[in-house]
Image (cartoon, rainbow, N blue to C red; front, side, top):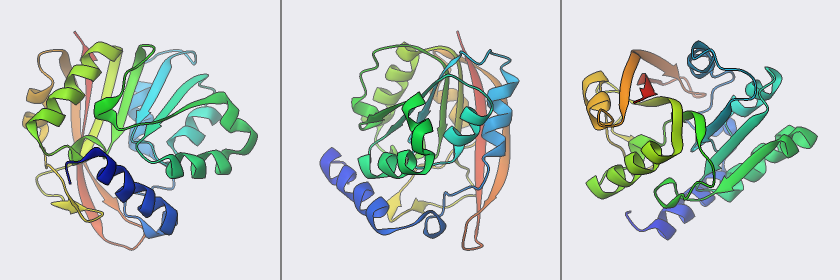
Length: 205
């Protein structure tokens, strides 16, 4: 499924037909992501973008912690609608962008780029290169990437994914970023299965 409109339709259908407790990536509280974001020591005015954020709860916790410049990007407008409904009035404090990350043309730069489980869906060299190019242009500070590890699943939501480990993830971004730290984490899905992730943080060179 390399065609962008097919890809979009796939995700619109997922978010149209499933609740958060029916999809594997749901986390009640994305603690690892929050820990990485706070480890960078930036102020509450830091410009943060959540790539493939969908209807993730990360934005809720960032707002609770007082962050003022949050953008959520996802290929599925349905996913973003769900997040907006959940947030209610607070949704007005967030910028929402419905686009495929590989077609993203940022109008601003970001101090923190966060991506849990979007990058690993890019399975062609062309798409990976596009993503890296956009990230290098858009990020002025830090990046957090979370993907399925070499011990994680090979598919998600019916789609093939690309597994990574610390070395392979770091080498993809070494031209523009310096690795800060990596860790692996078991994520327990809402239906009790376990998925192993690798998370790495990077600083823009």
